[in-house]
Each structure stands twice: as C-alpha cells, then as structure tokens.
Amino acid sequence: MMTRLLGATPVRRILSPTRCSYILATTSVVAPSSVNSGRIQVILGEHNINVLEGTEQFISADKIICHPEYNPTTLDNDIMLIKLSTPAVINDYVSIIPLPTHPPVPCTECLISGWGNTLSYGADYPDELQCLDAPVLTQAKCEACYPGEITSNMFCVGFLEGGKDSCQVI
Image (cartoon, rainbow, N blue to C red):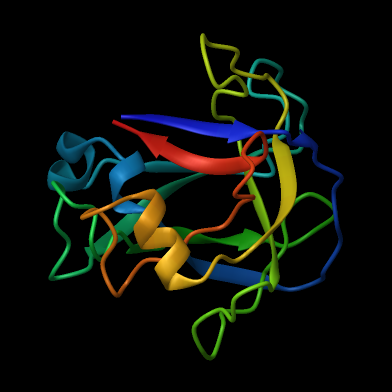
C-alpha cells in the first residue's frame, strides 16, 4: 500500500505546554510484525525525515492496542492506541490535538499531513512533513469515488476535481 499526499505544503510547528502518554495511530501504517512483537518506536517532533534536527523524541511503545474489529483487507476500524513507555514532552515541536466528539460534517475543513508520495503518477516522497487543508466529502460522494471500499467507519477528505488530497493506493 502506498500513501499519497497531493497538493500539500511544508508544515509549520506549533506550541502547547503539557505532557502526553498515549498516541492514536492508523494500524495500516505499522508493520504487522512490529504490532505482534510489541516493538514500535514512535518518533515525535519529526519534520525532515532525513535530518536529525534535535527536535525529535524517540519513545518506545509500552503497549499497543489495535481496534478489536480492525480488518487489514478493507482497512475498516483502522486505528490503534499506543501507550508510550515514557510521557512525551509537549513543546514547540510536539503538541496535542483534541479528539473529535462527533463524526466530521461534510464541507468541514480538515488538516491532513504526512510524508506520502506527492505525485499522482510516478513517485516523489518529500523529506519534509507536508500538510493540506481539505474539505470532508459527503458519504455518498466518498462511496461513489471508491465503490465497495468505504464502510460506515470511514470518511473522505479532498477535492473531487483531484490534485489535492490524501489517499491510499493499493
């Protein structure tokens, strides 16, 4: 599986003072052997993946909790909770985002980010974290774009005209 992040720009860093001991992540981006063995190291504060900038926090996972109904074929319930072995230090490079209290409403702008391929055809993986503001699509539009692949636990973010989105290409 290959992740794409199209039309994005480099991320700016933000500040929020506190500490955190848990992280939510998608199960599909972690190698199954790592989950099964419990050997996951989280890198927080990463910006340029090819440069050790001194802002990174390397923390081992103490416990990994995958969603009990995760389906690796359909990616349904693609979420896991990672308990860190030591709390992360929240600073200029690592911050906490609030969890939503309800499903996203169509047309709501969402910030998506990653180091995925920035080309629709070919490959160009950026060194710097990329981000993009994009709208949530209606479930009907999402299902029309990905027939038979979208479950009630999923939603789509992007632009129907293409060129700017975050998508999974299998």
